[in-house]
Image (tube, rainbow, N blue to C red; front, side):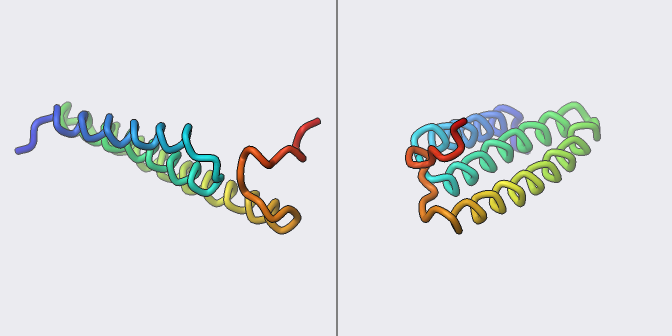
Length: 100
């Protein structure tokens, strides 16, 4: 059986990679992928703690997180596609039309 520490380390590594990618990249699609990686890292830790504590609550919460992540990805990608139709760039540094 795999100890709980390994799952937490895996979750921390996944979250760190996602955070580094989100902060270092300027492409909106890559930023969404990194955000999804961070959400999945949280899901791994929730399932690991849920299994360790013999409780189903963490696994139920994972389904809600997956649902919210899917909705966020769908809406976010729809906004990116709508923006890309008018302005042919998806780099964060070049998007300044949304300023007031």
